[in-house]
Image 1 (cartoon, one colour):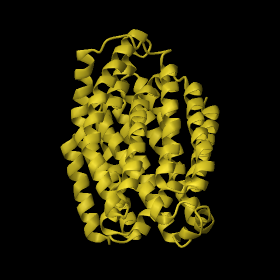
Image 2 (cartoon, helix red, strand yellow):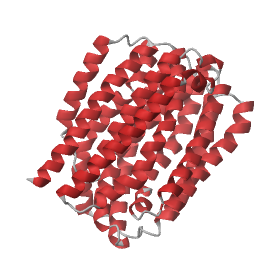
Image 3 (cartoon, rainbow, N blue to C red):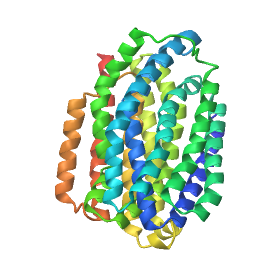
Image 4 (cartoon, helix red, strand yellow):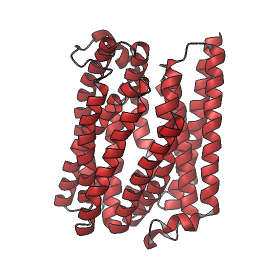
Length: 408
């Protein structure tokens, strides 16, 4: 399964990377800056809307994954909560997005066109984050990955002609949105094999999920601000060109997300299903962290050795970012590492104290801002590395703390 899953994910990431590079090369730096802002805000709204709901569904679903009716109650309950959180997130974030568009030179028409395209993509993504849990729990990965391939091929086929003729940010957004909506419907059909959607929601399940949401939501809100703080700071204090540059570097770093996708598909669900045996869980936890660390160090080494060849992919507007590309990849690796560790222990229903987590990271952000020049691209990338380092240590230590509680 590992070989098939890995090769499929490589195909998916290759198509996605090609699509992203195509957009970078055809859009002007001004249009790509708007495209970057749109995708950053989309990710932010998705995190707010999810608010720990998929984590709660995974934790509850892991207990009953072999019972279609019981799993159905878990999923229906999760979707009820997701709809409410989704609407609230849109109401909060969309006005802010339009303001950032206007602040960075977009017309009212362009701002509205991009925003309209993001709304269906948003609902498709927050649905996917729950729907994909069922085949992952059952380790029925092939249909799930075929659907992902279809989404990425659909996006590429729409991008190739339309961006060439109409090189605007909102066209790129629509080209990504339409396949996502179609793929969302297909994923619902895949989940039908494991989930009985005719079940009614369960107040007990919703209460259990909300308990996790209450612990995760403050962290999610903070994560929305801290994880993309580089783009938020540049959108306010930097230039439009800097936003485009960090967006382009982020597209290259997206290749690294293959590691996170593979981990969440193959390792996290299995870790969630393990018996509460201290020695077994500790061994698997160590093995998982060391494996990811070795892979990420290898990625950083490659980028450090051949930055010019990597930057050539982005085009002539970005060839002078040799130092910045290394910094961007280090920051992305740290962020992915922290996310993997968090997903690993969260799958067991272990939620870090949000007040403690936010306090630690706020201190790291304030110290980082004081030590760096946040009006420059290199400055915000170094800030991102400082934040990522603190998050890795925080999440890994909390995971070990929970594991040693089992021994006690």
